[in-house]
Image (cartoon, rainbow, N blue to C red; front, side):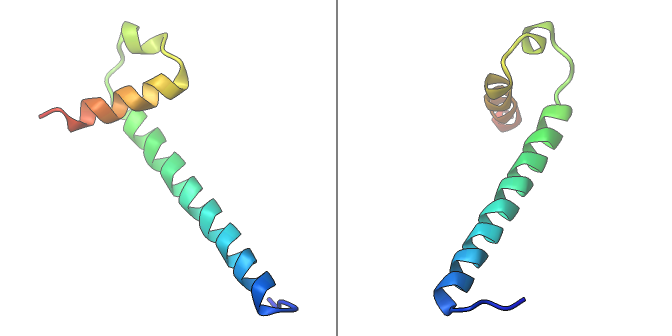
Length: 61
């Protein structure tokens, strides 16, 4: 892969890094959500709230 200038190449690297981090976070969030036992309360939560609930549940001893 070639870049016409260093600034363009650095911008490209930042974009690729951001996408990689985003994908890894999403995969981890999905794995965490899948590890939670089914619950009627959780079944009706919006996805964003479900992610927060999953994190809270994992943090409890």
